[in-house]
Image (cartoon, rainbow, N blue to C red; front, side, top):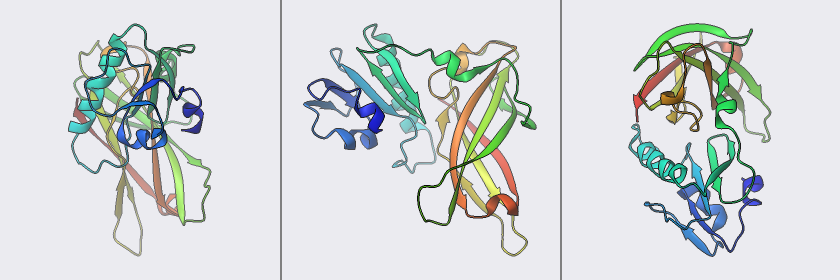
Length: 225
């Protein structure tokens, strides 16, 4: 968030989701509620707002509506996209969202697991990698990257969440999960996918220390936006 904050001019007008807005309480013009002002200079969206505890995607549908408003304003360009945080700005060099998501082939280390997510989207597999820990908490941090594809063009917008079941011979299996997030990392929706390509999505998940050695079972739940 610090990197993104440096790109936002304090005198400018900013629309931000609630968790992100906490970093900008001194912003001269700060908007929190839709609709999006036509004259706004920056739009900062956190599509993985961890303050949300709802099991459905109603809140995410609202954010997607704001995102579409931002993308419809020609003066606003996507200049940052990382870990579910998107920054649209009147200033700066735009990034290519397609290059963030689209792949020509599956990685060699992929764990194959074919499944039908619905609406014509196929789940092709995933990879798991450990992330560095910056605290003393007995928690392991993991990045789960999924790969999906379509056989024909699909007119849909979908959200997926990752669920991890930690197996143990001594205790009952425990279930952990992420919030729903839009397929295409929030920047390249399913409606823009083309057959023959693969599309990557990243899920960050925290598990009890040592879980990777106990054995993990991955599952994914999909809902329409």
